[in-house]
Every structure is written in structure tokens, then in C-alpha cells.
Image (tube, rainbow, N blue to C red; front, side):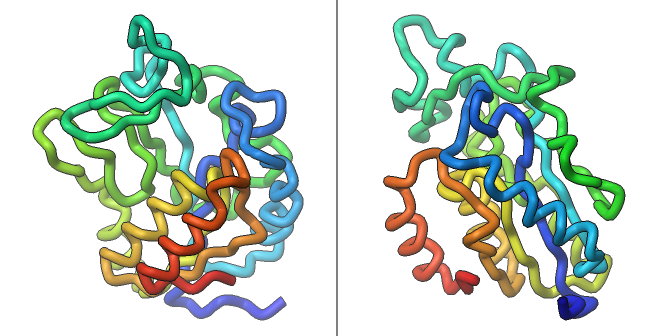
Length: 208
């Protein structure tokens, strides 16, 4: 395997038990990507590796249980933006929120926890979703990567059509070259694959 250029980083999104089959918010075939990502990290293919971790308080505003009369996968208005309601998942300190134990995370240079603000969802590794003030606050990742001389990012993980997609789009908007490692992602449901491909192509993101 060829070693990636020194200016290229790998971002592994939300590889956590709650997104695996049998988990609280299972992605379609989510476990299928674990061996490939584990192998990629073990091979030390990338000099810079970032792993993100969904890390929600139990009262997170994206949880359907926090909205009386609503069920998971309904869309409501939150802070003036459409918000998908999810089953409770990746609650701070629970086993389902841990990084997948089948992967050796020692090569990760940064573990970025997101979604920890009770009233703000966070799909992307680069920016929170819209908050009460209408803004999308930065997580600081873009500056951290630039400080390490990174100009290109490769993204993988879960879910293909939500957090990985948003991360790739935000990375592109931040000026990074972006490759989307399609086979090392899985969607919440496969019905989202065609719109995801279209969104990536519209943003000028390379699908690998």
C-alpha cells in the first residue's frame, strides 16, 4: 500500500457500536467497514489521522424522546432549520458511544467529540449544525489540520449520507481537497446513496 502524501489526513467518522447492526441507530451494514478501516489504520498509511466520536448528553435535542408526540425519523423545526429526530444514541459514557473496540485507535492523532451541546446537533467534523443563534460554530478542526500542513482529507465511516457527507462538504468549503472513500462508508439506509453521490459530485468531491 502506498503511503499517503504528508499533506493528506484521514478522517474516520463515528465508528461506534450504536451505529452498528443491533445498535441504537444502526446503519445499513455498518459493521462491514470495520475490518477495512482497522487495516488502514494499522498500515500507518496516513501520517495524520482524526477520529470523531458522537458524544451526546442524555437530553440531546435531536432525540425523539425529548419531543412529546414525535417519533424517531420524523423531521421537526429546530432553530429555524429542519431537524431529523433520532433514537437516543451515543449517550456520553455509555458502551454504545465508545469508539469501536475492533479497531486499534493508537494511530489517531486527534479524537474529536461532537454533539455534546444539548441544544445543537453536530453531524460534521468541521462545524456544528445550526444553533439557537442561527450560526454553525467551528469545531476548530480546520485550523488544527492547517497547522499540521494538511491540504487534502480522505473521509470514511458512518453514516455515509449524514455525518460523513456533511464532513466532506464542509471540508471542501474550508478549501481542502477531499476524497470520499465510498467503500469504507455505509448509509443509514441505502435509499440515500443516489442523493449522496449527487451531492458529492456537485461539491467537487472525489468519490474513491
